[in-house]
Length: 214
Image 1 (cartoon, helix red, strand yellow):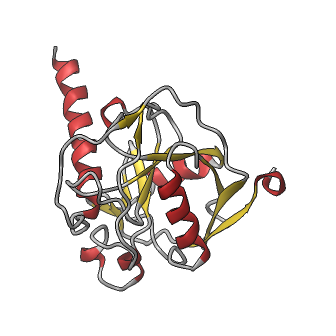
Image 2: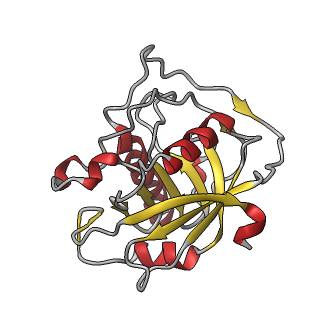
């Protein structure tokens, strides 16, 4: 019974961690009702993939993500837009633990670590695109605040099966190469809470044809 309680507590902690990711990102209508869940749709890899290049390439390799535009077209479009316009250049992995690594906050570029995880892009929030895909290892999800429709720029990669995330956060991709880099990032020390003391920065995210990334 104690083991079950520990697992439940860990799941709830992970959920609260993702929920707090975009605390200031709320949509204008403020609705928090359950969003529709797209069911029974097989993810189809987009013709383009996202390649995350790290500033410290000697320590961390690239992370390649296939994108599911048939599952979450709005979030995939947003991710591509922010990657291409440079919003992700220089952001850090500001939230790192044994469940996820999370990035995409423009505020993590500045010298104030206290605001990391509270920011978003200048573009409008993205409505929820929930699906019944499972949050297994390597799934890429959109972080949000308490409002289902408050996803914007932040994203996370799951490091293991996270059942508590199912049907709650938009899934828009999956890591197809570079999970070893994600695991290395997750184990970095020292940290203040979940934020690495020494910033781990993304150099840029490149959107390229899937064929060229193989």
